[in-house]
Amino acid sequence: MIVRTIHRAESAFRFYLEDTLARFEYHLKHGVFPDDDERDEERLELYEKLAEEQRLEVWGLSADLYSLLDKEQPPSQETTLDQKAIAARLQAAYGSSNWKELLRLLRFQ
Image 1 (spheres, rainbow, N blue to C red):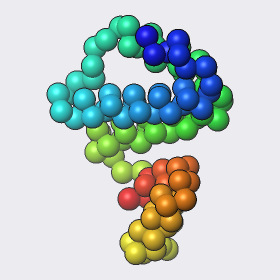
Image 2: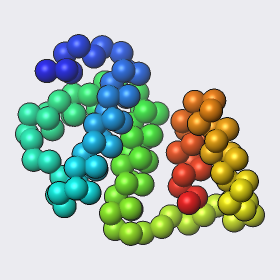
Image 3: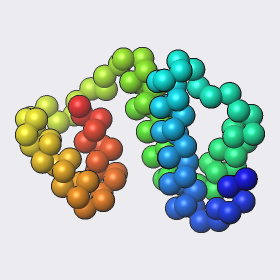
């Protein structure tokens, strides 16, 4: 059980994000989310280790992914930026490991 080895909120956050992405990848391949009660309990334990800001970020990512499944597009808040400007900002955010900015920019696509 990996949860027992995770003690820091930052480690729990990264693992939770990776697991969330893996669950959605599974859904895309198989049409359903994985059914694993033990894993769900581990996810709950990890979620409880997250700081409030991290929980909001996880919730935002999850909401973004669900909107992709429903084929909904969130409204763009930066309609004045052209695709080249957004691409440059995406590259800058990725290059500087500014993941919050990267996620925010990806929501505009």
